[in-house]
Length: 185
Image (cartoon, rainbow, N blue to C red):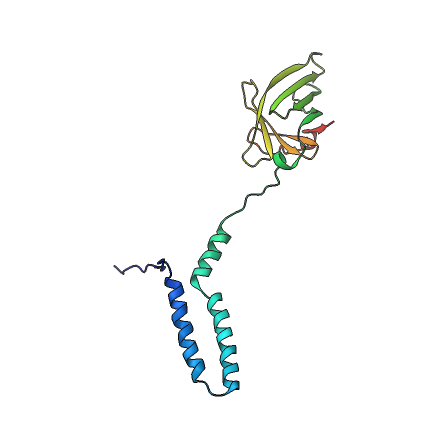
């Protein structure tokens, strides 16, 4: 079994500063021993190059860069934050056994809603539900907490529209996909 190598970072207070001070003193001694001005200028240039490359290749700097790159900054431009989502949305959603479902959704600032549905070609009375809604984790969709037997109603919130989603929270596909939109009044 091979011994594992461990990276040890000196975290003693002032340890890094002491190393720098010793190196600076050594450079000053070397500088004082140089005779000509040309030699001193070359010495300055070489020290400057050495300082820039030493900072660039410092493993501690690379570790900090890796940590910064690995942290993902969440997108702050969600529908919940960026859009004026409160209001009334209307449209006619597809229906399997009727001409369509005239749907009106009112979203309030306090996260309550009113949804009215009229099944066209069947009964002339509206079905009305009220309740609260919640935003999905990504802040792009809402879930209406209706008293339904099947699954909750989900909408993607866009600029002046609600897009009705399937029960898995995905966009409905197919030839009727474009009809699952409610427009804001």
